[in-house]
Length: 287
Length: 265
Image 1: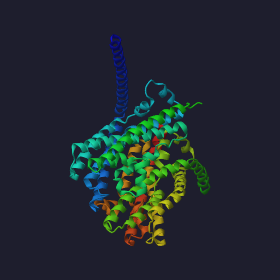
Image 2: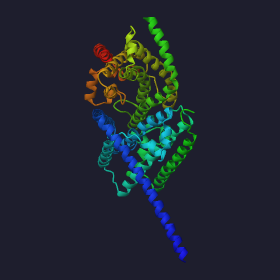
Image 3: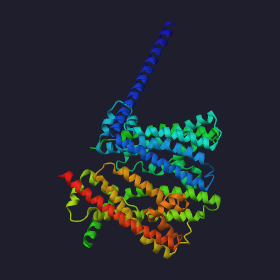
Image 4: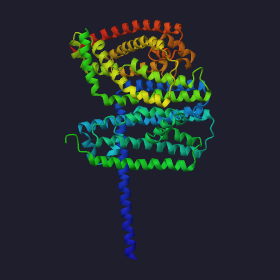
């Protein structure tokens, strides 16, 4: 009896210890993330004028995007079954994904490819932190964060214009699906750059992602079937843009929502597997 | 002079040929936007019958021709030359008794273009098979009218890009300035949509700018959609802009090189 209680107590202590370790690890990760942010903010502040110019250019492109939408809708009322407000909202969602690409994925790809070429990847692997995490977050284009705010404003305004009836449940599924869509694209990116471990001369690893991104500006229902298949299954841009908005408008049934969420989780698991397998293949630049 | 160009061509062709695999990726990247616009506008035209007189087939042929014309009139000088000014490797070229921009860079750009067009042929045929454009309105006369416009458009674009690239002598932010120039082309050249479907104000401004020679005018000439009057007006504006672009380029280039030597000394 007594030994049983003792056993339970030691189990509990072990559990508490493990919990503390994971907490410390999480704290550690958060601290690292904030350190990365700090360094990148300092860089952005050092090149102040560049940051201002970039924000102005970004506003210019927003103006152009709104002009193209107004031209489209001065000639038609719907496109692929969607109205003006919905396309504004879609532009917002597209800009969310685009920001992820520009703020995180492109700069880190550049750094990653460089580190494979010159062998500095060795140091990244030696750190006592998850290497996938390091490769993902070491560079952040900080000023792009304001783009996220802009994207959310566009989504809210767009939904208001469209007059679609939105319930809190719709909003929740929208957020979940947008997250899982972003995770799917992120996972694809991890797989693409991990391929560099097998094929060292693979500098073009993300071009295909970059090229098809623009297709996310319009509802995938507009495109011919072959293009729709590509951007839904092969390079799933539409899963992160069209699909969440369909959920917001209440067009998706529960089965499909669950399916997309499952694909999100599965693709992340798969990507980290591929990453680990790739790391095992990695042998440094000199050998 | 001819010998110089011949030799430059051999060197630059060999240089571009090394990157042939990369070029395919570049082409795929560049193809996507026109195909998206093609899909968007044909879907609208199909559902409405026509958009302001443009049928679905008009849009298909417009963007199919655009793929070729855009490839011919665009250039990559800012990428070839911008860095040379910034990292100083231009010095070696300045010693040579020929103009670095108007000989070496020009030939390099044309070699790049030729290789791209070679790659474009199979891709274009595949796209034609998918979208089935009906080119019955295209006449030999239209193409002959368009060719000088394409050449004119290419040189205006080349000189204006050259002038902007020369700004690298003064500022490191030349790529941002070039991005702005690129946006102007997008708005006024008719890449997103044939200019006739743009707002009235944009069309009026476009008539006084050279950008419609880069895409819209040659495409519409090939499609046989322009009146003689419009063609003449386009050529006239183009000639004026050729002079303007040449002046702008020589001015920034001369000033810039002088500055460059001053820094290097």
